[in-house]
Image (cartoon, rainbow, N blue to C red; front, side):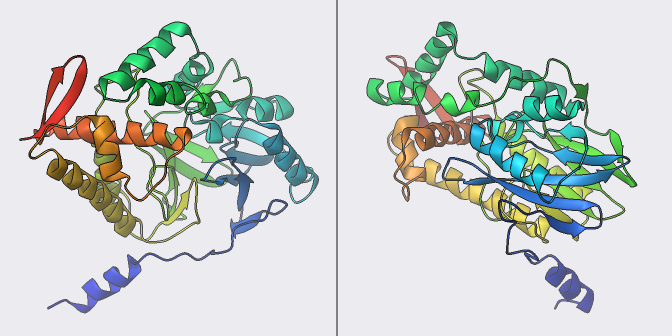
Length: 353
C-alpha cells in the first residue's frame, strides 16, 4: 500500500511539459524573470538547438551558440535586431564541443568582446575537431570502422559527409575561461553550480540553480529523445556508455525531483528522475538486444547495427552516429563482462558470455 506522501511525490515526478510551443525564429520566451529561451535551426533531422539567456549585471549570459553556418548568423542577427535589440552579451557559456553548441562561439565572442567559458576538456576537444582532417587521423578512422566489420564502401561514406558536420564551426576563440565540476558561477542575482558528465561528450557542462530549482541539462538529459552516446576512433576502447549511465545515476542522487529541466534540444520539462530512468532503461534494452543477437554466433558491430536500429533507414550522417553508438554499447558490455571479443582477420566479433 502506498502512502499519500508517496502518491504526491510520484505525481510530482511525472513528466510535464509546461511550454509545448517553442519560440519562433524571431522570438524569445521568458521562462522565469531574467531567464529567456530561444531556438535556432539545425540542418539535420534533429532540426533545432535551444539557447538560454540569463540576466547578468550589465547584459545577458548566453548558454550555447548554435551551428557554425550563415543561416545561424542570420538567425542571431534577427534576434539582436528584434527581441534582443540593444542586448549586451556579458559571457558565452558553451556546454560541449559539438558544433550545434560551440559552432558560432567565435562569432559571438568577437561581436560582443565577451569571454568564452567552457570545461577544459570540451575546449580542447573543440580545437581537436577543428584540426581533425589530417590524413593520419582519417587512416585511424578507416582502421576503426574496418575493424568493426564495416565494408570499404560504407567506410568511405562514413569518412566523407558522415563526419564532416564536426568541422562546421566558426574559428574558435584563441583563449577561454575554464569552468570545472563543482565551481559556483554568479550570474546576476543567481548562483549556479557547475556539474560535468561524460557519455554524450567527454566533460559536458550542466548548470544547477538551487534557489530557483533550475537545471540546465545540455544534451545529457533531453525531454523526448535519447542523446547520442558514441565511441570514436580517437579512443576506440572508451566506455562512454558506462560514463553516461554513471552521470545519470549521480544526477538522480544529487538533484531534487522537482527541478525545471532546460535541455539542449526539445522543450523544458519537469520529471527529471522519471526521464533519467527512461533513458537508462532505453540503453539496457539495447544491451539486451545485442546480448540476444550474440548468443549463438559471434557478431561484428556492423552486423549489430540493424539489430539495434531496425526502425531506421540511415544515411551516412546517421550511420556514423549509429555505428558509434552501437560500439559504445559493445564496449560497455565488454567492461561489464556481458560480452567477450575475438579478433579474426583484423575484424572484431562479439559473443555473449
